Image 1 (spheres, one colour):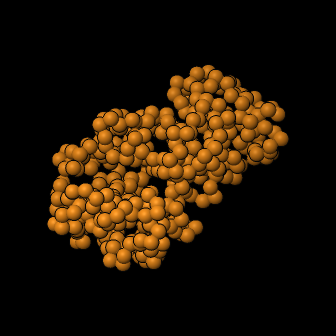
Image 2: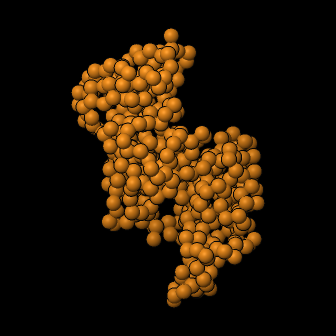
Image 3: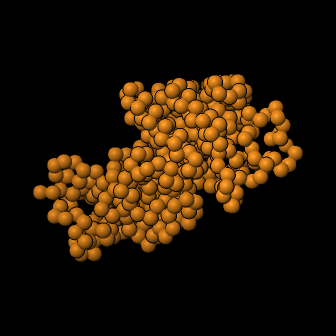
Length: 403
């Protein structure tokens, strides 16, 4: 149970800032139906039970105090079926005293991952209206810049309620002077009306024409805190980040706090290590955009989409590109190298590909400023000799001049 007796939102916000994050998304309500804000629609909320604190408000104030964007995620749609297994055994789910927490748990499995459970069953209007009222309440109270929805809102029954929410949120945000973002999965919103999450624990194969999001966890095994966590190496997280950004994506990294409200020490160490890398190499990430090709190398992404991250093995010959334009004449291309090669040829710079057009390369350098580079341009590409790579990924900056 999340008791949060040692929770310090300002400590969290400082860690997030040092990690290099630009925005923070709090799970305001997950599938369990427990709201982390002061809600008038349920007694099962953090101000009345457990921590007896308004988690959403406190974290919003701390995060925005660090100059970061604050958002919330809302997973109540899945609550329609989340506790249905509890109806098959002797459990609190059957206790009428807790119907307002576990309800509307069904007597048969409705889990969409267990077909054909949803063939003839849809959420009822009472549940859908409650779903809408809760998220409107949270948005009205806390004015988040971002609202993230999980996947089951793609159920057709939610369509009129999603439209009502989007209309409300976008119009209210305009009056509040904020730039709202809705994140969704599996086609729940129309193209161009919100930002799609295209890869939970994965990536996509090619550059996407508009902004998209990938989300994953710092732990291979869980989204929440577990004692035997399998934490990812910082280099793995950074490789995933580089791949996503090269394809026009935004990267959302989850951490699971302990029940007392503290961030596990290993998770904190990883976050700070990622932040150290971004302090040096963030120029290639923040404010960048995709180049004419997202990358090169032998480890192509053969299977994109959800739950594919363990199949992604980017090696020392793999490269991802991002770019920034400095008008009117200069363009900086960033080559993110995932290994520690002593020599590499960037074949995307081959003359016959004409990806740099008539530009002249005026400088090739390392963003970390460590060690020297020797480079030459030929029909085979941009050949670079690298003195020593202490830390991967290494970012090479290629400056083009359009004379």
